Length: 283
Image (cartoon, rainbow, N blue to C red):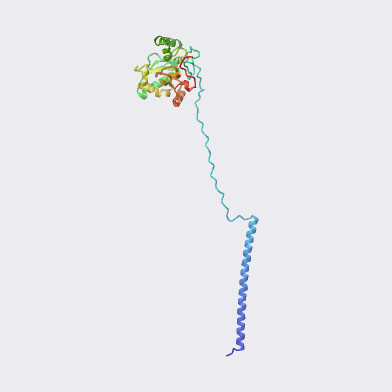
């Protein structure tokens, strides 16, 4: 059965409309795609222009590394040094004066101007220079308070003439060689400075004998005398330096600062501390 002319015409019109609509859709899709490409290209170009002009900061930047603060080297602290030139070792009025067999007092008949009686227990009336006397009083009280011991003075200041008598007596009994080992000649004696004292136990035990070193009083003095400014002047192991035999009873006042320095450094003679020649014999 054949279609009528009107039916065929209607079908052709419907197909034409479908084709036209499809073409329009295709054209629209192509236009949208092209617009997107152009827009994207313009965006990239804009970003490129902005970057090239330098007017926009980059999206992100690498952080600047933080450097550690420099470590400061501390300035070394100066170590205080003892001033060995603070006082004279030649002037007989100085509490640091060094008198030995090579160093006579100048003048040889020197007599201190500030001698005073020392108010402590004694065998013979003790006289010393004021500063040394004050230190002795404090030390004698300390040994009583700290150790329950009692000290006494056996000898202190001796004038030139008194020292001459003592020396002559020892020469008569010991001979000159023996006397020179135990007793200073006049003008060379520490006793003449008014700064030296022969100290013993108040009981008299081992008085002016080397066994005094083994008594409680002698041991206390050996360990503590420096605290009060005194030096055991003639140690047992320094006879070749001082020229005198061991006298554990002979203490010389040199002041707390020097006595403490010598105690701290372990130097036991004035000759060695001040760099003086050993004085085993008279020059």
